[in-house]
Image (cartoon, rainbow, N blue to C red; front, side, top):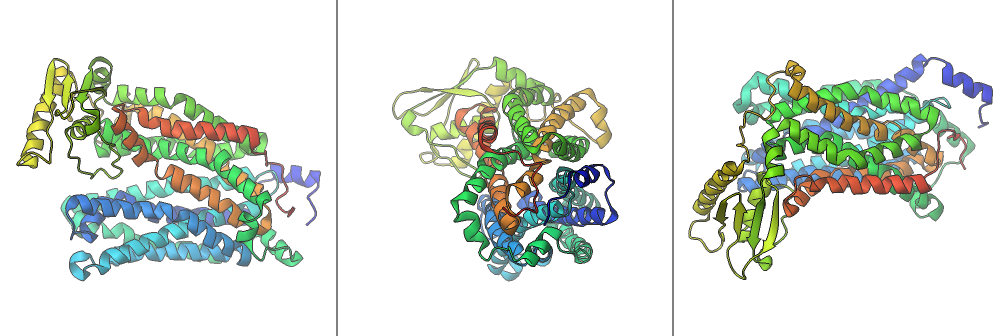
Amino acid sequence: MTTPSAAANANSRTRPMSRAEKKVIFASSLGTVFEWYDFYLYGALASIIGAQFFSQFPKQTADIFALLAFAAGFLVRPFGALVFGRLGDLVGRKYTFLVTILIMGLSTFIVGLLPNYESIGLAAPIILIAARLLQGLALGGEYGGAATYVAEHAPQGRRGFYTSWIQTTATLGLFLSLLIILATRTYYGEADFAKFGWRIPFLVSVALLAISLWIRLQLNESPAFLKMKEDGTGSKAPLSEAFGNWTNAKIVLLALLGLTMGQGVVWYTGQFYALFFMQSILKVDGYTANLLIAWALLLGTGFFIFFGWLSDKVGRKPIIMLGCLLAALTYFPIFQMITANANPALQAALQNVEATVIADPTNCGNLFNPVGTRVFTSSCDIARDFLARNSVKYSRVAGPADALAKIKVGSSEVTAYDAAKVPDAKAAAAAFAKTMLAALQSAGYPKADDPGIVKMRNPIDVLQPQAAKIVGLLFVLVLYVTMVYGPIAAALVELFPTRIRYTSMSLPYHIGNGWFGGLLPATAFAMVAQTGNIYFGLWYPIAFAFATFVIGVLFVPETKNRDIYADD
């Protein structure tokens, strides 16, 4: 295809969006919203699903299986990118993302209908995990298809703006899933929701699926793909050409390390780890924490569009790199300010109260506990795990060999226990917790229901100064998300030639987001528990965001002026 003239390019930048282009963006974005809705439902309802489908196991083990099944959806996303990316480059963008949304919608609907373990036994968790894996595979193919399809319909000079609508879909899908869960929970009440009402959000997905399929069936194949087919320049082996050829494989690697790795951790920090941090570390109740995040998302979502539009003017690379750099430089003060406003008493205790674990170093193991259900037995591990779960900042010093660990906090000293050597570990744990909590509160640490902890009873409570300040800080985190995420689809599409574009862009995106981003919350909290510093987990996103900034600035090319029809 002949490269458009300068006059045509200028006209495409200024003319209004056509009706056909609006339809392409709406159909692609709406379908992707529904796919993210389906994907997030499982995460939001993981504990209930664990009780329904893994009831043959003790509760702690059931929670492990439920959350591991959730993680599996993230881990298989890159494989979905390979499977559906190849299909998209061989048979077309439109038909491939019709297949992905069909798989996603049906898998979700099946979960809503699936009998629990008590009804059909072992078949229930097996079918559930299979459905979850299919969801992850389908999502791995959906994003690349939607982004490629929209970009290949966009006029030269407006790809950032057009594809930025796709970037709002993950946030909107999360928002929609939380909204429907909240409405269903309110209607049925907690008891009936846990018994059967949890199925309603999954069953609703079949209506969303029907709408998405109907809209997408009316779309035409992308002009870039059709032109490639007419010219006979398509790839017969997209996988080997994309990853077996070092010229293109090098660009895939740069796309991962210099773009999506940092983008993924910034995204998950701003939307997921911030929520986890408030609930699990700052002890903010779930309703309040979700409302605070919801307000920040509501205020920030429009900036996905803004930064996509801006990237058409100044470039993709400067905005993404600036977002990674600002995140790396400011995460520590922002999260410290969130603590100061959400739980002032905890902030004061962290600054003024010293806690020390005195233990035999050989008695202290690692505290990696990604799903919060690991049982520790040594006195050192029990002591440190207790302090971490109660958000206590502590240091560690070596104690006598073979002696039980002791915790010194303020003027108190409490001896831990060895769960393997006491006659009743449950009673020992209860006694230790009671004594330890009393010592912590006497030294200045707040109770879990401290009146100073931020609390919202309805959405309008955001006008209260304490809540408003936190929303402002969360908004800054979301703003970083929009900076790195708004232009990313256009940047990835423009890096690769049409014949292997779907395959090449999907893999780095889903490794960056599914692996580096998806595993962030569990890994970050493990780092907190291991060190006794509630902010130490932030080094995870900071390190990867800064690494992406350095690699991106040095090696990733600017792509906004590339002609994506030129298959070079």
